[in-house]
Length: 285
Image (cartoon, rainbow, N blue to C red; front, side, top):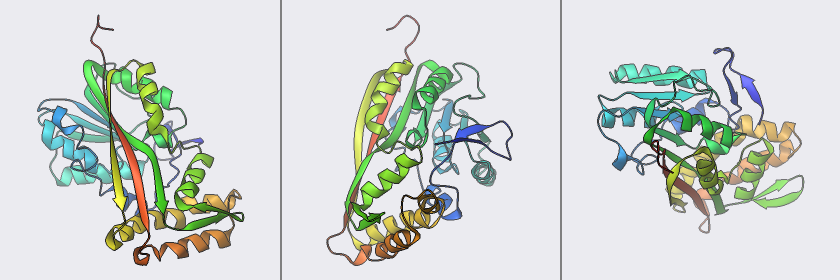
């Protein structure tokens, strides 16, 4: 995954988000919520806390935190300026005066040491090339006695359709993992995050897992609505441009996706891991 500078935010460098930023992808991320993606951290949040949402996207989870910790301050950061603009507009519309969003580099956060009671990251580490460096920065800005909550991928498994990559047939989930790795992502980063958290200095690390199962027609239609714009957009274009698959093979897999909701054998399982870990207070191991 290469680094780039955002033209609308000079000097801000992030790893490249392999899914891209087309409207369909942003629409998908806009439907994330505290009730779903942030449920595992909600019992730990209290009014008056300061919270950083690193990799906030359009801010739908961030704004859920705002109501829980008010009058505490909630800050969302992301690599993409367009998503931050959308998040700020929505925050103003909802009159969330305790919430702010900005473009920032996860490797060089623009915050003082020990700035936040809680740090939250959803689906961030699978997209960055140097998770250790990013975690070191998140540790730095977390207050002693504060905590980090990380939710990321463990992997996906399916019986959806076979995908041809230069003539080699692969399950759809294997195909998506291969594409992610080719572009610098780490699709199974979740299983490695305990080590990353520990090496950065976090302790009392508590993992839990969560599975999403899609097998009913409506479920599979939803799943298709997530993956189809990704393959029809930047992700698929790169697969063809880099020679991972031909244009015909890409068109074929997009066509096969139309059959998912009517296939009585179709099923997909997406596994997540959720970590809570604390930054020790001075004098504690």
